[in-house]
Length: 519
Ligand code: KIV
Ligand code: ZN
Image 1: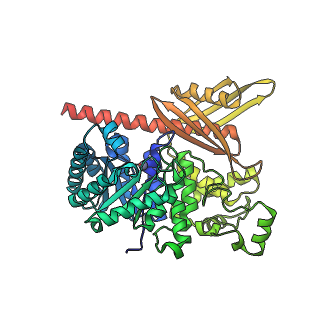
Image 2: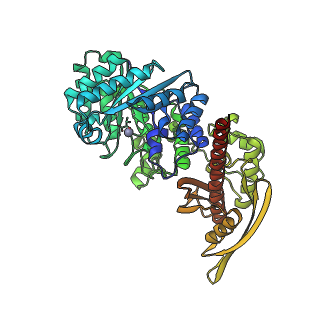
Image 3: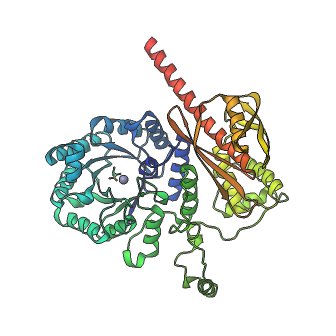
């Protein structure tokens, strides 16, 4: 049997479905490029029929990704499959993933049809998708709770119709490893044409078993795992990419399979996804949690000092975490910054050295010492806040204290026009937000505000993440500075730039529509 396990990443589809604010096209592309560097074989990047925004992002990613297969999701209905085919056809390497529920509970309560109808719909969907591509995946949603005879019938029929990958999802995370592995084994024993397709698994983590179930399926012959970075996804999430990749790598002796994942990209991709998705990683999470490689008890520390492998089965370096943290100051030259970035695994194409160096000097002046993690934070931040943004902060001054009313003055560059306002507020952040709102008059409601430190110590960079609603749509904004009031202002400005871009796109679409109607 083939020893390669295909890694199918669904961070930008199943993962994205679970976020408090949806990602912008630019953010999705940034993640897609990171996934490509990480070496995922297939990336599922959206559900094109679900909204014009999803269609556009799937198309943009399909245009830009060259080394991974780009995939779009479609229910087993014609309009979904056509939308996926249309969005993806700009790529020469794409897959359509179509699905329908097969468990009794879904067939009867959700679809309200007979199983035979569902089987016919699945077969039609696969045939329709084959008109766009030879690379068609079919999923039996809620396969984990589907009677095995029905599952075997559906799988056989989908393969006969032309599906080249058959996915077996444990949609509600209900099964346990021996049971889920048993389902895969039964399919191999009973479906006569099973060798004509790759068998895939897609496990959710409701009982915390998604990774164990996926590995058990691989032991029974599955050769594709569907997963997400940091395990993000519906409810308790999906199977975590970094965990399965490192299990397969670390326990090759037992499993005898491999993946194409470039492990050294794991830490960086995890941080990018966490930051852009506004989804912190729990400190004790396997592989990518901040405590994953820290040894607390004296006995453990003593053991690790004597020989690392006493308590460490994988090294931080193997996932791209640099242990050699150098501290830089404003006297460090550009070549030092470039060298640090190279050591951390970034090549020049990943960042703009002039911009990064300018932000580094600014930070070094404020903070004195700058560490590797500060440089990475600046890099993320520079990518998010580009120079051509419509709204830019020019000046901010705040007075606050325990016995004075907080007041703020803000000067904003609004598309080239300088505007200034002052306001009082219930605390310094509120005063700044009131002043900004006076300038822009945008009806933005901040519904979530979170502050965290990026790095260590009291002079660490402060990161502010907000979720805000504008015109019924949710936006995520992020700000980073040594001053947390400034970070708060930057986070709101980040949202305002998302809003401005969304408004500009909507206006352009309306104009095109009007022009078409006039013609
Ligand atoms: O969990 C699930 O069943 C899914 C399918 C669409 C594959 O996400
Ligand atoms: Zn799912």
